[in-house]
Amino acid sequence: MIKDKTLHDLRHNIDKVDDQILSLLNKRASLVIQVGKLKSSECRDFYVPSREREIFERLTARNNGPFTNKGLKSVFREIISASLALEAPMKVAFFGPKATFTHMAAMEHFGLSAELVAQKSIPAVFEDVEKGRALYGVVPVENSTEGMVSHTLDMFMESEIKINAEVMLEIHHYLLSRTGSIEEIKMINSHPQPIAQCRNWLADNLPDVPVMDVASTAVAAQMAAEDSSSAAIASELAAMLYDLKVVEARIEDQVNNFTRFLVIGKGMAEKSGDDKTSLMFSVKDDVGILYRMLEPFSKRGINLSKIESRPLKKKAWEYIFFLDFAGHINDPIVSEAVQELKGCCQFVKVLGSYPRTK
Image 1: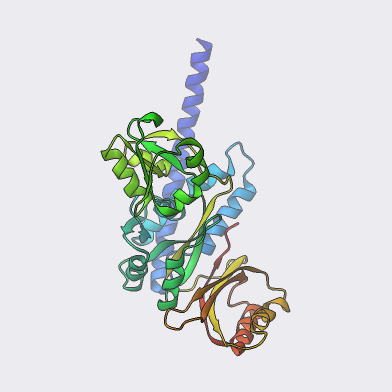
Image 2 (image 1 turned 180 degrees about the horizontal axis):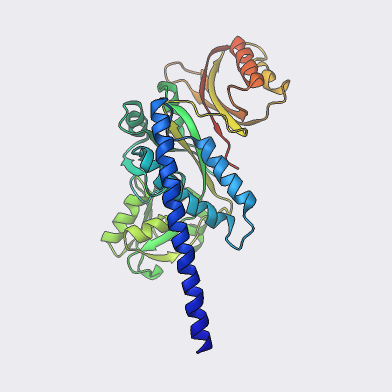
């Protein structure tokens, strides 16, 4: 009897707290609507990655638990997502279909209140943003084990779209089938990258089962849903969306398997205080040119985090370089370094400055 009364009292207290949360959420929503009107009158962007980062960092720094920082961020991700929907419709294109890792990255960054639209190719995502059919796009750019996504890099050669943010997603691969029985699997399908990331597990556990490349992990999941002898290497989200059972969880060969995604838009992101800049350039064919193109950053103490080269399609044996480094293009030393870099390059193109993912 005492336990029932205590449980009743605790639940009553929870209800009162929920009522307070509801009231505060609507109070916050009213303020957000005012912010939206102000932004509209001043022709400012509704989505500001640096502001979102500031909110997350302030709240996690003040969090004393027992609510975890991860849980706190998830809750406020959805609060911010719903708030942005009050300010303006947030349409986001992503390299789909649904249940792919790019879809998961888009959901993690923009929340469930955004209108997420799947596109069949990376160029189609860029085109949606360029033509205003979507405010932003989400595309993969590199995996920690398999390297760069060349299609994304190639698109920056042709497009004036800017990088507004980055999303780092820890990748876990699941072997899925309709029955959940490993003995019934006669064929495995997936995108080439997940297959490569699970190569050792497949060789050790299903060496005699043929593995086929398909357009995406979602297509593989759909095939598995239609054929009980077929399995897919896909995400846990794919299992839920296509009503599949997990044969084996986390079959990736590398424990620390991350994919980096880019959020692309028409404008440049505001400074956050901890930014990264990406640019591309082509150098003149000259003695010591590789040394000279890095010197402007070295002598100013600017940390370079990535350098990648891609061949120019129109000219044999000439290359485009992609560079990521710390700082915002509006920082004086960064601006100076880029200006000096132009002196030894045929062209330099800033792809964007955006908050660095920790």
